[in-house]
Each structure stands twice: as C-alpha cells, then as structure tokens.
Length: 238
Image (cartoon, rainbow, N blue to C red):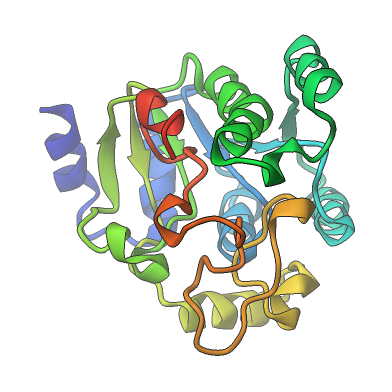
C-alpha cells in the first residue's frame, strides 16, 4: 500500500527532510493548509525558509479576526512567498445570508454546519482537488480523538494522504520553535485563544477548560469539529 510505503520511506528523517522528500515525490501535488495559528506558522516557516516547493493556502471565510489578517500580511512580507486564498462561492454565501442573516450559526447546529460547509468545507474541496498530499498542523495532544491517529493517514473523504509533520510536537515544542526562529504569530494566543477560527465562533478558553472549549462554545461538546478533518459525509454531521 502506498501509505505504508511512504511511512517507511520517511521514517528516520527529520521534519524538514520529510517535507522535502514528499515535495520531490509529489511535485505540484502537495499542499499545505494554514489558518495562521501557532502550529501552522511553524510549518509555514519550515516550508518557506527552506524553499520547499509546497503550495500554501488558506480558507478566507470572511469572518476572521483582525489579528489573523495581520499575521497573514506579515507572513507575506517576511517570506515574500504566496499564500493562496480560497473564498466561499458567492452564490452559496449570498443565498444563506439573504435567507437567514449573517449570524444564523448561533440559532441551531444545522445552521452552523451549513455556514461551516459554505465558508470552509466547500472551498477546501476546491483547494485539495488534484493534489495527493495534504500537509496539516494537527498535533496528537490537541484532542482525545486524535491520540489514535498517525502522522500520516489516508483521508477517505478527500481521497488523498494527509501528513502531519509536527504531529508529535507538544505545545511547548511549538512555542519554543516560534520563539527560537522569531516567527510572527497570532497575539490572540497570548490572550487565552489556543485555537483560532472565525471571530464570531471563537472565544478565549478559561483555565482548566478543554482545548476546544472556545470554539462554538454555545454548542454541546460532542459537536466541536467543523468537518475540515472529516470525510465529506461526516462534515455534514459535525
């Protein structure tokens, strides 16, 4: 199986060499998604600072924090390399907002799923189309349901391989790397935001709360995934 072979081929390599190996093996078919959080800024640095030919993209939902846009712009200025933006389809977004208003996601889980699908899932599908490797900033200790994952896995919904280059890094590892390399990061992290998404759907986390408690805080804890890292069918459910 290709996945098992790849795991074996990159075994023993450091993080940069793993990314270089995959970029060489899958030219123009490997892509990295960033939301400009701690983890993603670390990976962006690894890619850009080492001139690894991996396309970097982000999902521009239209509802991001001002601080996120600042990090996005500073990253462009520092590395002078492109970050490709994928936007929601205009007709889908307009139809939703015209019918339900700009904050319908607060009214029901179904409405929130719809908003996530239009602003994030559908643009993600377009971004990933034609690629074979999707690089992400997922870490094992970010949530319980990720502890049984591997740093490389098959994504059935998107029909490609996902690679998590800093999967085994702790949060302290990420922070140390950011500090050591003087990497620009989102200052909301210093204000209690471990996970930063759309502004209306993200709040700071209180001491002792779960890592993802600040995302969609008005919903039941079991529904705290937007579907970006689920299959297409699951994306409609979470």
